[in-house]
Length: 234
Image (tube, rainbow, N blue to C red; front, side):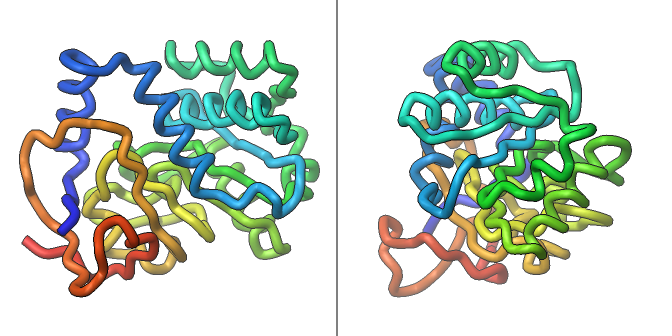
C-alpha cells in the first residue's frame, strides 16, 4: 500500500523535512530529477516548461537546469515576473547554462509548437478558479495537447484541487508526476478527466501521519507506474 495524503498533511510533511532533514533547494532538485526520470524526452525538442511564481514553478526551473546539463534543449516560459526564493535560485542556474527564459505572454504560438510541454504553474495548494495569465497558460497547454503535444504536469495538474479533485479548468496531462506522496484529489472528483497516467516521485519527505492508502492488489510497489483513480481507501 502506498500513502495518499491531504494537502495539509503534505504541507506539514514538507515543512518538517525542510526544518529537520533536507533543505528546500535540495528537495526541489530531487523533485526535478523525479520529473526528468519519468519523461521520455526523445519525443522531440525543445521542451517547453511553463512555470508559475511559486515552488511548483521552481520544480520547473530546476528541471530546466537538469535538461540543460544533459544537453537537452528546453525553454522556460514564465507567467509572472515574481518568483519564490528557490524558484529564483534555479532560474538563475538555468539561465547560466544558456536556457532561454521568456514571458508566457506573446509566446503562445512558440509554446504550442513544442513537442513536449511541462506544466509547472500551480501546486497542490491551489483551490478555486484560475484567472489571468495562469488561465491563459492552461488553455494554451490544453490546445497544444489537442494538436499533438505531450503534456506533463509537475506534482498535480494545474487547476485541480489537491484534496477534492474538483476543477473548473485544469491542465489535461498525458503524465502527472506526483511529488512526495499521492494526494487525495488525484483520485476524486474531476481527476480522471484530467489525469491520463500518474506516477509518484519519492524525494525523501518524511511521512508524519497515515491518512489514506492506495490499494492495488497483486502489483509490487516498485513496479507501480500507472494508477487508476478509485483505489483510494481509508
